[in-house]
Amino acid sequence: MEQTWEPKILAFLCNWCSYAGADLAGTSRIQYSPNIRVIRVPCSGRINPLFILKALQNGIDGVLVSGCHPGDCHYLTGNYIGRRKSSTLKRFLEYLGLEEGRVQFSWVSAAEGGKFSQVVDEVTRDIKKLGPPKHFVKHVRSS
Amino acid sequence: MVQKKLREKAKELLSKKEVDLIIGFGEGTQPLRATPIFIRTPEEADRLVWNSFCENNLAAYLHKFNRFKVGIVVKGCDARSVTALALEKRFKPDQVVLIGVPCERMIDRKKVKKAVKGEILKVREEGDKIIVLGEGVEVVLKRDDFLYPLCKACTHRNPVQETLLVGDRVEEAALTEPNPEAKEFEKKSPEERWAFFEKESSRCIRCYACREACPMCYCTECFVDSSNPKWMEKSLSPSDLQFYHIVRAYHQTGRCTNCGACERACPMDIRLTYLTQKLNQEVDELFQFETGVDPKALPPLSTYKTDDRQEFIK
Image (cartoon, rainbow over all chains, first blue to last red; front, side):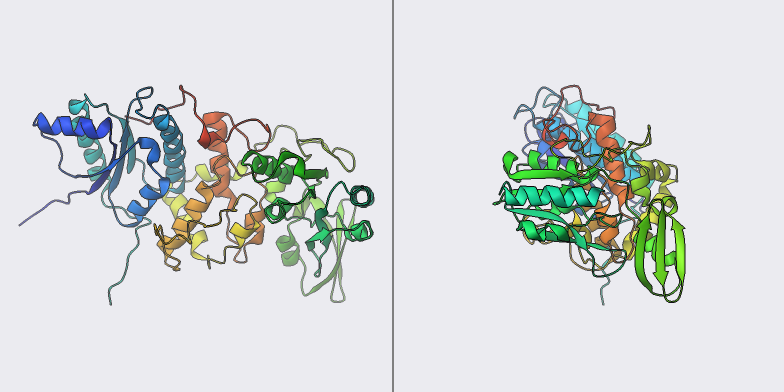
């Protein structure tokens, strides 16, 4: 049976907006790419860059981090701090040579079920084009 | 002479008991080296030296002595590290007395060693020349040819704070690019960049000399030692070596002063400053921040602006 490679993408979704937005996409029965694995976090500002790096080291094909729109953070300022961390990390990883588009970021509100499905489709398309990660993955030899 | 004024200042501070101890540089046990020394009496002040081999960032020692009133000999880069540490509340504001030294830029000792055959017995500095005495040979080198590349690009040769300046201010380099290695590196293709990074980090033996030399690395539990959560392993697999270098550099975002102590401490001659320079370039471009220049500016990752750049966010 022929199967094309399907990427596995980790999606860190903030509990109050993006996770609720994803849930709305689900209850609205919107069809979108099934390639994401969701991790619910309280806020996009909770994301430690080490989460993303550890995931990449373990072989994840892509990472999506999504939070509340600026000004709408449940904790008022968490997404602003998260935005600064995200911008510095993204630029640094691309500087090192890790492919652009492997780690992506979005703002999705609790009412944006449609936008969430679009974002996931876009990210999946981008990762499919990039292919499996060539760098940084830890290969453990089984003896 | 700076060294004479430095010793006088140290004697004065210690006799008047304005500080409990002074962290400075002393004569190294080998040629081309100076060693950090810690003096507590005015008589010991004559042990202090100042030359082009005083390459350590002494701010790394402040963490050990934060219960005492400390005088510390600082170059321009070191002074900025002290400001950054004060911002992170590593010591009370009146606990540290900066003994600022105008820096004529440090000499790359590894480059000097490569330029002279055989064992080096003694090194002398005379103006713009370095006179190296080897086994039956005396070599005269031009100082300007043997400076650390990072020192050549330095934009803060005088300590930014004027607490105490021992000697006359040196001329700052006019309009140089503060992060030249990052600018050069960006010209390569992504594949070339990863290949370079992989090759450099492959030599790493995880000795953590870079971490110990850095004044900003003071966490009681470093991320490499954390077992719960276990971020990474201590193995020498290529992926773990890359992980260590990526994260150590990233943890310096908004904190690194381009002092170069990490690269100089590395026993495997791994290039490190091109990583932190990129992050310094980013915080400058994105947040208009430079470490240690403004003692009141908050660390960039601890604060925000509502209109921060977000063109990369969907």
